Length: 618
Image (cartoon, rainbow, N blue to C red; front, top):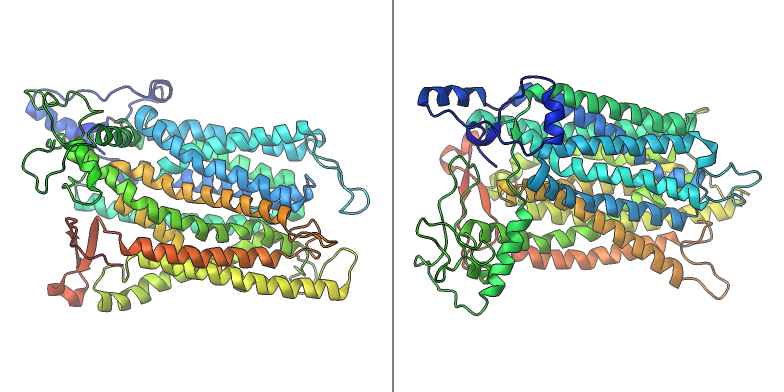
């Protein structure tokens, strides 16, 4: 990331700039004047937009998330009720699409960093998301784009045609492209508006994160109550049409703020640097790595105006150090690098190490999130057979149950931040009260407990349904029996998911922020594919000898609880792996309390040079 005074573009002076910006995203910033006084004046004009830009950025993100999440929050129910899919097929469609959607941010991060920049990437992505929502609204509105209603019984319905499935896939494709561009760029684009080299800018960045996560939680609560209720009880046309209209509002608001934004010129993708380091290290694999840095490593000074923290060479993952070893003819007289695919700077080597260090931790988050995604699939199938009445006239939509997890997160985070952290801080001497890896591990424990409780509740639900023998397979058992597992899942999200997001953003260098924000999406993608694989394996291998499989179409004849117990067992094994991986992890930086000002809980950031003898906090 470049300093706002040197590398960020001037604010546009007219609305015609928008067209030029979108179709000519690589236009460089105006060169600074040669005169010193004029240069000083230009620097003042290039100060970040700061909070002047926040109403447009936060407003756009709020409406965009409200639209996007509102479109998919009840999607499993839409596939079951409107497209008449069996629960296994509906689960497969949902998991595969979520997998594609969550891997897309990796591509979006590359396009943003290497070619378009964050503003333009978000601009294209919002239009793609809007197109997907328009098609989804048309699917719900036009009879020829969805199967006809069931005539007699729920189990005697006509499924979708190939044409109808094709239109559905087209809509989901547009939505995936939209998510791929928006997710990796939204947070970094907001951070770009502040000057991180000043105390005021750093405070602004911290406040931005707080407002971002607060608005996200509020959006989730609104979606899983109001929007889902409209979809379930009023009309799918209105339920999809309202998010589409909100997406249009988000687009308008985003472009209204163009005169207030700070624009960072794309500097090249971090993926290119990573590939260069791997290639250079492999080419020099036969070279010997010296025990000490005796000037044999390529370590040029940082470019003028950059705000990226300079990283020192470490002995962790020493194989990559070979990429920075200087051999004859690789460095010019002026100190330039003649071949970046054979010689890389120490900075690039250490940035590559950051990614490879985090991969083992990242892998452990996939199984944890596999448990979390079940609340959007088979939990809804359970809820559809339970008593969802709240009073004589109101029935809770099945898709609204996820709000229990959201409320748990919203209530717990302030308690954790204001009560638990100060108490733990006195004992652990850490600003956060505990390490981020500790926090992630606790979330894994909650996800395992949630699956165990979900399995036990499902046994009770099925026994009640079979005992009452209703024609529709419903049970008088209240849907609030699902609340304990959803509350436990809320704690899992509060500890593990938020811990993961903070962990990636803190452990990656500043110029890898897009990758950091797309990495969690890859966790969700991996979880979606693992969930789809488990569902298909269980569906195809269980049952037989006159007994249906665990995930048969009639949930009362299946054994969904066994799937929950299976995921819990995988979670236990994953927790053991996580503990092993976390014990060997060395943090890029640590935050400790300054003992001299303990009473005021002032803190200081202690940058730690990683050494082989350094003891990890976990």
